[in-house]
Image (cartoon, rainbow over all chains, first blue to last red; front, side, top):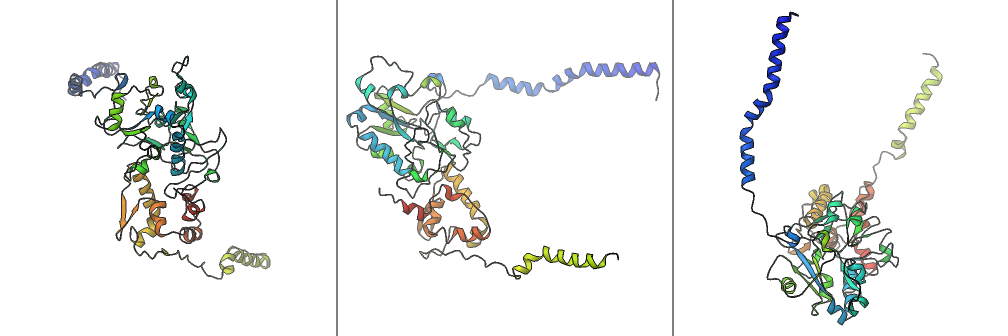
Length: 275
Length: 132
């Protein structure tokens, strides 16, 4: 190899020039791509309609429910009827044990349902009557984000937060993520605790998480959710599309003052309460 | 050959031991399973017989995904009768005896699908009859 000082200096200077010039060359050749980026930034896509707290509301069908607690106070047996209807339709085991119990729709005192609300000088009805609680089918569901197997997911067509029990590995991340305690874990085989079987619905197995599914399987057949059907005629549970301005549920929401469970979390619950 | 007297009988014993399952079973395969045809007399399935034999598990998986994920709970119509997509809702309407249909082949092939951990066989469902 030629080891002359002259040649070494030549090669070194060319290399140095190339090194210094390369960034400039790259910048020159990529100006076209940058220009298109600037154009896109100048013309942003039209922003979707505003929802609560200035965030974008979902579009398309979004199923929701209004729970009119006044009606449940008028008829104290009504809530039991709704809960029993759900239990029968979904083969829900009745386990008499706080740790193992399975709940899709259940009763809870006001202070547990709305812990962020003021508790002093509450109305008689609020203090003495249990509230109906179920999965909120949030528009921005934390459980779906937590699930590592996509066993729980948002159904595109109607906004229901559904479960695919086949995929659930029982990690219970969704239970930790849900701020409403709407999910139950099968600590033991549920079958011995199921009183009557509905042959149209499966049971679950040990190690699977379950929750309210807004009766997706009944909606597909054109039926109402079991709890809504059980309260038919009373107007205690109003079910429908929150994004349809002409739906019954929207008429009620437009007229009545309603509250959602812990709306400040930004989960955008689809279940509303008239207290 | 050294030690001919021990090596050859040893080899014979070894070969006999290794091939013993063949001799003991008398060169006969176990009787192939005969799954029960629908007791109701239905002749046509949702897919041809040959396809169902090979791919029923795939069909069930596809049904599961379309029902749960894509909300395509469409009805399946076979010979004028409609069924809802699903193991409990469609398959078991005709093949009403899981023990005589599913289990015959699954036991023969030694496969253990976990369908029935959650899904109810018609027998199981009838054991706690729903009254509503």
